[in-house]
Image (tube, rainbow, N blue to C red; front, side, top):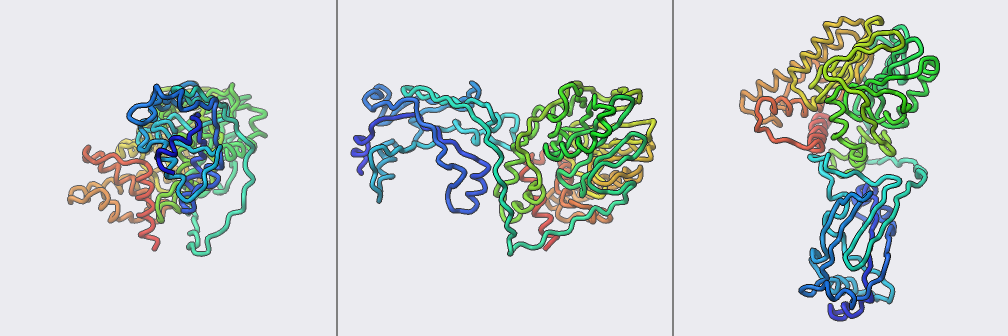
Length: 499
């Protein structure tokens, strides 16, 4: 069809809402076989079919000029107009008709109006600007000048039936990851009593997402220290704790810091539970990485090196259905609470790993929960810094002289474990400063650093982030990098040393 014939063949215009499953799209496009379940004919048409003559008043320079807005729960997420199309509707249909027989009733879409789709608002450097993916109960409204309004409520379906994974015969065997740090109690998955009515929940091997939590019980009340990376893990933990929490229900929960592997299960706590966090932690939760972002990391195409790395690190977790519950009560530096007659001290020793980093001290039991100020047998990662403040935090924890120390990741330890973390941080800072003084770039410094005795710790590639943060402290002109870029560089660092 010619462009003129195509224009004459148009019987009318309507709103075409093209629903897309972006997580599935990311996987399918990597196969280079086109769209499949990511689109799956998910289209809503209507509410009206408006004939061309009724839209003549909106025609300008041969194109329809219709204003468009897209809203979720009546919040506008994008707006634009149809003249932003590079080609007119007639030109689009002329192209579509090449080599095929168009028949009455065929529906041809224009393509998405810019800014009127959620994925366009996704930026790893401006996470707070992302309105979030669609959830059960959300109402999506599309308004198009002259065509009316389309309004649909999103509903969640039942979970899909999982398919058994198929191993890639060409893939190298996965390395055997074993955390070899000394442990005060068996480093196994589950609940371990570390003192009188004090338990640690541990998840080997302590890598990304495999975090620890804890429970402190008194007379008729308990304090929970952190939740876990997804809802299934948190349910498993809370179920294991039930024999103790039935006698002493959880009345308070302290969130040591904002990362999802210590917060994503918060919603499973009873509404009566008071969630406590440092103010800086609450602020980071409010504006931090949404669980949906981590789901994107699981499926993103980051290249031949980083894609298998991120899927190995984050693939075991299920980020669906998570609605992060933030703190009900905040404090600045210190807070003392009573848990069933037991005094428990909460101290914010950040910024360090994150902008705020709290520890829980149970004086009568000689137990310290260090959160992610402590990685035992696995490499710390400096998302915030400064490193000197993290070293000072280690000194503050050592000064408490508690015989039992529960880290955020890795096996239960003692003050020597804190000293090991301190030693790593000092070593990296000294190595980075020496490289900076030699004129090396931060990437060159990370690539050539001698990790010495710390080279055998799990996730040694995190040194990339740690050296980068050192350089950010040494030179404010060091460019700010996205989290995803740093993950890719970690994967590349590890690949060089694994080949």
